[in-house]
Image (tube, rainbow, N blue to C red):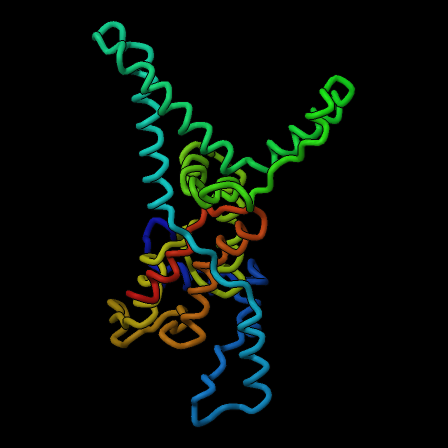
Length: 279
């Protein structure tokens, strides 16, 4: 019933009452562990060695992963359109008098698919080829036994490093992969951080709009229809350095969880924190 109100202050009041009644014990338990951002080195009031240590600690943290999912999806869609067009010409070309285009379509299809496979799975192909060659070493001619697999650094156009068609492969994995467990892990990370930092959030998957609304709700005052006074409720004031850090930690929690377990971000979006800061 509280969630249906979509009011963070109502949720905060309910959670506060639950804490007083002993139903909640750990809500907001990690608020005291938040370390504010250190002052810049050009500040007039630095804190000596302690400030330097905080700066070094901050710089040692892993950076937020880059995410260009728009380009990845666009590249994957363009590749899919080209492949689909070639397949259509190959299958139905004879019905529409396009027999002359069939060899060209097959050539384009072969080059496109082969380039994507070699560029993104070069190491797998080399390891598989080497394993097959060792298993059949006695059947190979003497000239073939001395041939070594090429190195990806020596391949033309950077093929084998993923720099040529890596966006296509990442876009295809983004479009085709469905992992409910992965989505749930990101949502669990967000709700845990919100609970531990005392944020009365509604969305399991955090977004910048929800974060901005949460900060605004913490700033506004409402007149009570019952009492002729102003009430601020139990929602902590978030328009401070520490308050904004809480919201940012909530927004980045799914990214931290997913980047720690998977090489590509699919369920989480690191852009939400940047958009929140720009609002």
